[in-house]
Image 1 (cartoon, rainbow, N blue to C red):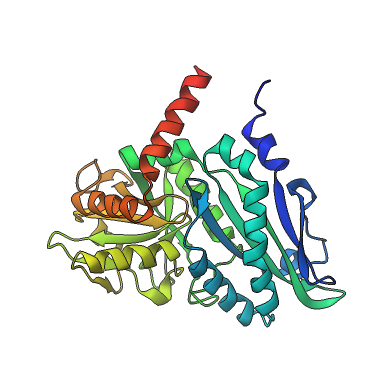
Image 2 (cartoon, rainbow, N blue to C red):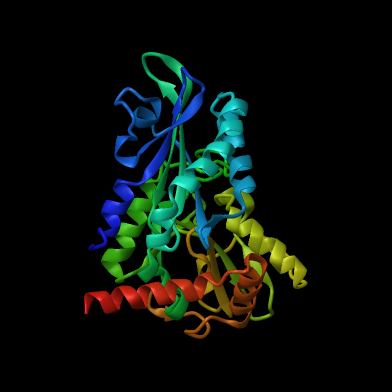
Length: 320
């Protein structure tokens, strides 16, 4: 029996939808998860999102995502207690129903989406949970050859348009930034700025610079999305005797960096090898990047870097 394509497997996978009347989640096929046109999230872009990827078919670090989601729901004026209490139990049920999907895909990302209700019926929680594929070939390329960062004129908005510790699906600026980057450099990732012209973050990750003296520098916390992966990297750095300096970071500083690290939920941790046409440090992952990756593997008991490279090779072999 022929295995269905990945897109079909995700469209026919299971998801969860929050039922405001029943005050609980119902298990549905992903194709049945939708928002009405009168949903306030659809109308205003008021959508919270958390993406939690699996490792070895298991979800880890769920609590930091729930904590951030709780804060976002509080800021939207939503009573999060019942929703979040049911969420953990329902995710466990969804995992059990998704064994076939995770077996075929090896791993996937779980997205939790919340909006503040409907234009006609008023403020109430609308929410659903669904799976998304992991871009193995892109990750494999990043891990082996690094990412090309492309400076764009789009501002991040975190901390200026909305609190920096809200993870929102209002991501038009990131979408435009990556379109601009891809037009100018094949495979490029847009590096956004603050309204003051300093380095901010990318659509896929927070950024850390390692200077020639070994200092680890991040843009100011109030200027970037508060990433759960960045929090993990900061904790690992502390265990190695490093402290992140949060300050204004000029684009010109990246050109002379020893390493530039990227930390994001799907890719975990990897390096940037170029800033447009200029090489950053060495083309290969630097010593701190490599050390942190190995520490992350050890903490999880799972080598996500080798997994992505093997999955990409298997995919290429199938196409050849």
